[in-house]
Figure 1 (cartoon, rainbow, N blue to C red):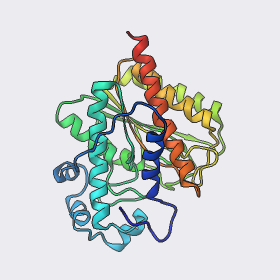
Figure 2 (figure 1 turned 120 degrees about the horizontal axis):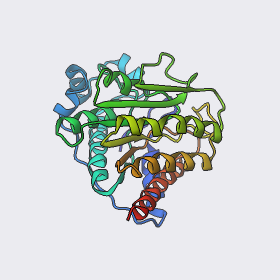
Figure 3 (figure 1 turned 120 degrees about the vertical axis):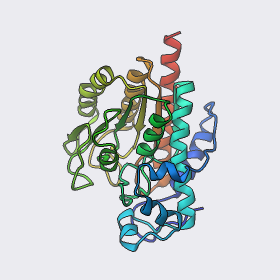
Figure 4 (figure 1 turned 90 degrees about the vertical axis):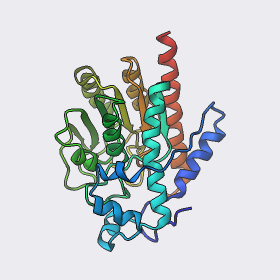
Amino acid sequence: MAPRPERGTFRFDKYYLVMEALRASGAPITEHAPEPCPREWLEAVHCPSYVDEVFRAAVPREKERRIGFPVTPAITSRVRHTNGGTWLAARLAMQHGYAANSAAGSHHALHETGAGYCVFNDLAVASNRLVAEGDARRILIVDLDVHQGDGTASLTAGREDIFTLSLHAEKNFPARKARSSRDVGLPDGIDDDGFMEALDTHLPDILDTFEPDLVLYQAGVDPHIDDKLGRLSLTDEGLERRDRFVVHHARSRGRPVASALGGGYGDDQRTVAERHARSMLTMADENLRVSQSRG
């Protein structure tokens, strides 16, 4: 079990509570345990010297401050497994239409350092590996976390085979935004209808023009109106509409979707965990609906 940081907002117990909520839901879920991500996969995206610091649990203090918690041997093991989990979710999605990583979505991690509670960028690492192995020619990363996916954008910048779409609160972290393939900065307090209007404006068009083989979905629930670090005002219904929209438009075009957990913050960790669990169950249900309608 990873240690909790002494300060800050990040709480590791959320991940255990998400799994408890999924198991208690009664939904027919299948659990898979990922293998730890190989070092060379991480070094293909991140600076090898930084990867070495993490593997030795010898990350300099200034980088740990930027990450938001100390990088212990337990954290090293955790992030290797969560990165392996996103790759595994992508491979499973290609078989079943949809699969989820119940952790990860570490979209702030950069080339030479982690940041914003993110050590390695599983979205970029998985995308790079899937393309390198020939599992996908083009990958669309849809990032609907309340914070911009600055690390993912910078790590995949200039690539024609990876497209990054980020809808985020413009005035939220990070202060200095990277350049995604397409950025949609949203005003504070935007509601369900406003968010869905923005998503409808951009996602279907990108799916049709970019024609990805796979969608990696950073499905943070921190756009919720009650989120401790959010600045948007989506309700439970709004998050459900958002998740169904992403899966429906991707799956109706025959594109598999693999989601990663992403952000979600609050004093009541069980409430946040249940929000994440509902998100994954909603996407699984929508995948089933589309699959049945397609025959």
